[in-house]
Length: 409
Image 1: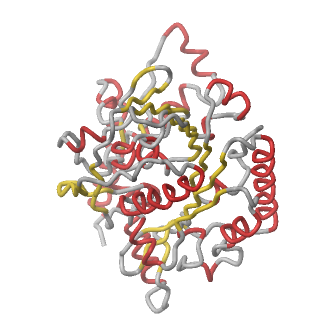
Image 2 (image 1 turned 180 degrees about the vertical axis):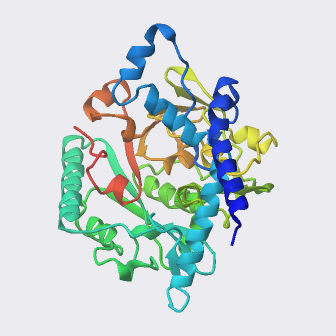
């Protein structure tokens, strides 16, 4: 037990830390290290006080000076992140103790989140997706949407590539604890009822080992092996309507960055820093091409920089987004090749990694992320960007449900 004197010393130390926060603010120290790499966000900065608008800024509802100061003080509190990590470790110790005598192969990585950790520390995974009659009805609506598009635009080839993720698969280790776990039902229902003329292929999990082979240990995205497997499957599907498609691009090599330990989205969500990924990427000799974003030529990603050795290895850097490119509402790829065809890819961050591989087989490729659109009108889009092929890529939420992903004719 602490003596009374030591207790008072601890209390004094705590209040000293609190008092340091406004000192940091006054001397603008709070502006240092605003980026929180682990949380993948910017920490709140202290507001600039303007005497002329002090009263109105103070009274502003929702985001007035008191709220801004409180947020900044919380985010800038000295040692905040270390305290959070300590609290999470105590959480995990309590969870491990509670599950010590149970046979579960996966246990919660935190008390209040939706991330699981395998008992052998092999990978982190989100809790199972739900499946219920309302969701099945939503899938049926999406199927009707595809059928309408196929009927309305018979000259265009519509295709879907379904990425079977562990959270929606039969093999999730925690399925038995969720009465409404998807367990592969979204994929099964969509495939069984999809329009006959909708070309369909999938990266399907046949076991939990497939997940470990094709996806990161700490992130929800597919890794280099999943990306290349998906590319091969999609190329074969495209060839059915595009028989003269050029041969697949073969990687010159796979590059492992020995000095990078990749910590992905699950790490940041659960603050679980004990599991890391190697960063392995493909080095591909692409034909000459240009990427257009917002009317300007852009490198979009940092692929060439990484392969040239120009990258950071600071902990918790978002290497998937840095190497393959972050989420963008609209990109245009223009390749110098013998093709005269045009492709529209619609998908989420899964497509960032595979877009240039697929675009290499087309003269023009347009990549659209519907999350950046309120409503996406296909008719308006093809007036400016006519296409021969439309390819939807993603998991159940992206390609089989309507919420945010329905294509308006």
